[in-house]
Structures are given as C-alpha cells and as structure tokens.
Amino acid sequence: MQGGLFGDETATENCIFCKIISGKAPGHILYRDDEVMCFLDIAPVSAGHTLVIPIKHHDNIFTLNNSEVSALAIQTRRFAPIVKRVTGADGLGVHQLNGRAAGQTVFHYHTHLIPCFHGKPMQIHGRKPASQTALAEMAERLRAALK
Image 1 (cartoon, rainbow, N blue to C red):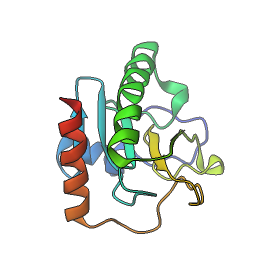
Image 2: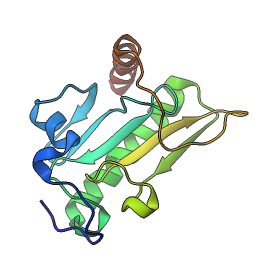
Image 3: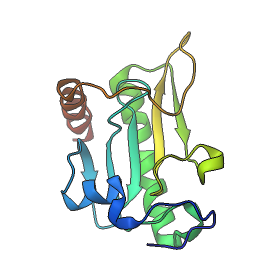
C-alpha cells in the first residue's frame, strides 16, 4: 500500500477497488488499460455514475506519479462527455476526495463522474445499491458509446 497522509486509510488487501481490479469482486467495468480502470459505482447518485481509478493502489492523490495523473486525467476527460450524453444529463459533476475529513469513503484514489439534472440535489455518494440489471444495462450503453 502507498503511504497515506491521513493515517486512516485501509490496507490494500481489504480494498474493494483492488478486489474489482483483480477479479475477486464483481464490477461493471467500462474500460481498462495498464494504468486506469473505469467502472460504474454500485451505489450511484444517478444512473451512469462512473468511477475512474488507477490500477496501482494509491490511497489518495498525494502518492500518484505524473504518468498516473496524466492517464487518469485523459480517461476522465474521455468518459465525461460520454457519460453526460448517454445519460441525457443536464450537467456532469467531476469530484475527487482525499481523506475521511474530505468525505472519502473508499481509500483507493478515484474520480467520480456524476450525471446531474436540474431540480435534483447534488450529492457525491449514493445511498443504496442499484439493481444489477440496471447497472449491466447502463454499462452496455456506455461501452457501446465508446466505439
């Protein structure tokens, strides 16, 4: 595990995102390369809520190297308009949190891409898991839009 600055991070072997990367936990994966993975949040704020993470475990932004930052930014920029278009969102929140005090709940660096709609309050974390069927259908729509 990369050393965190906050002292409250969980161990890599307990990290749900590392388990998704290794195939030990399920995930609706949209994209993967040697440095980055994109997948749907299982408890989305709104349909299409996507996470962009590094393959290598980092608790937060402070230990990423320049190559990883670049790869994450490129894929975040690539996916942002796709998520907005496919979901028909009025806007798109791009959020990244570092440390428990900032609201981080999974201690593996990740960026949220959250479709936003007029009249719906902005949130960063969903409150309940989406159905697996709804996640699978959205993942298929987003993957198709990548082509």
